Length: 208
Image 1 (cartoon, rainbow, N blue to C red):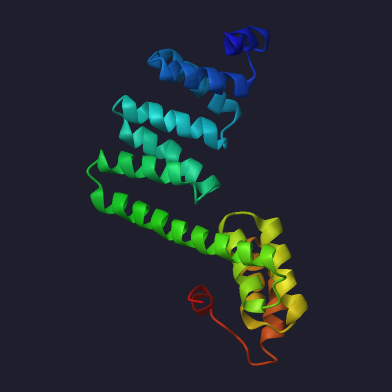
Image 2 (cartoon, rainbow, N blue to C red; image 1 turned 30 degrees about the vertical axis):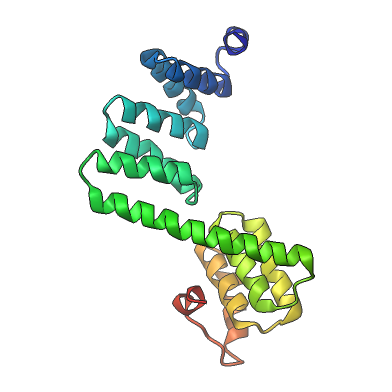
C-alpha cells in the first residue's frame, strides 16, 4: 500500500517504479513487474538494483539470454557482487554454457578470497597502526579492485608515506592512472620506478 501510494503521488519516480516492480515480481504479477522495471531502467540504466530485478524476472520467465544482458551490465558496475555472479552463472547454465558459468563462479571464489584477506588486513589495521608498506599497498589495491577508488588511493598514499620508493605501490598507482586515461600521472609514478631500477610488471604485482 505504501509503494502504491507513492506511485500515485510520483508516477515517474524511477526508484518507486523499481521497488513496486520488485513487489509485483514477488507477488507473481510478472507482466506488471516487467512494465514497472523496464520503465525504471530507462531512467536508471546503471542502477544495480533495477538490473538485478530484471535479471531475476527474465530467468524466471525463461529468457536467460535477456537476463544475461542485464546481469552483465550490473557486473560492470560492481564486479564483486556475489548475488549478480550467482544469477549470471544461473543464466549461463540455462543456455548450456557451462564452462562460462563455471568461470563466473571461479571469479566469485577469487573475490571471496580477496574479501577474506581484505577483512584480515583491516582488522589488523584497527588493532595496531600499520606501518608495513606491503600491507598498506595490498589494502589499497583491494579497495581499487572493489571499485572504491578514493579509499584505494588513500591506502596507497599511506604506503608511500612509509616508503616513498615502494615499487609495488608506485606500480599500482601507475597502472591505476593509466587505466583511467591519466597518462601524465601514470608516467610520473613509472618514472619514480626507473631510477631505482624497480620497474615491476603488473603481473608480478598481482602475484604478491
